[in-house]
Image (tube, helix red, strand yellow):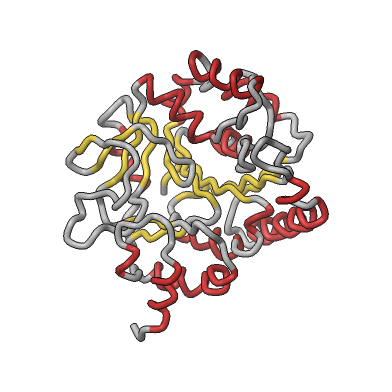
Length: 317
């Protein structure tokens, strides 16, 4: 049993169509973790240069989905699938505390300029009282070989390098005949190690974080990043930035790194578009993944290849 670690999953009203499938699936892959926390963002994104919430998040529909996602979380809690649920409301007093701790008090908006979560990620890091936190967005699909723990592997290798503050499994099934390649579309240069790669990008999609190490870099907003954010705010540019960009611009210049395991015993994939087709077939996809299977066209590709998965369903296996 892993005791000094929390499994934390972010949920929002946008996840109502699949959360009751994906959350149990993720939890089932981490039966050795007893602390299982859902952070539920019930706040409607603010208006920004990129998003008009009245168009993208109509009030009536948004409020209906808030009630639905809360009901889903309550069921998951009653069924002991998760151990804790935290609801973020617009008047949450912790928003001010998170702003001061992580953002140097520069902004308190619950979402980024593009309408994606902001405060939910900082609360997901802060609420657990364990040293380590595994985070997943609610739409992550995970394969983990029975008996293998990417969390244990990651913690072991993080201890080898003091600058490594986060770790992740593979972000896609390995490329056939070349397991020493992360994916077919890496965006940042990486350093090769025996059992993992390191680079300076900190995706918020999925990660395991060492909170003791992260604390050295707080608040994230300082120096050049603070000046950039002020220029964005007063120059009426896209503001604020996504949490992963904030962490990258803050920690990477100071030498912080993230590791990605080379092991093909665990990988994730992620739907770029949660279409009706995706939702309708999600149960089947999760069953296939739980058996360690996937369409060959998914190798090396992070986002779900819908055509490939639908074709795979048609072929007897």
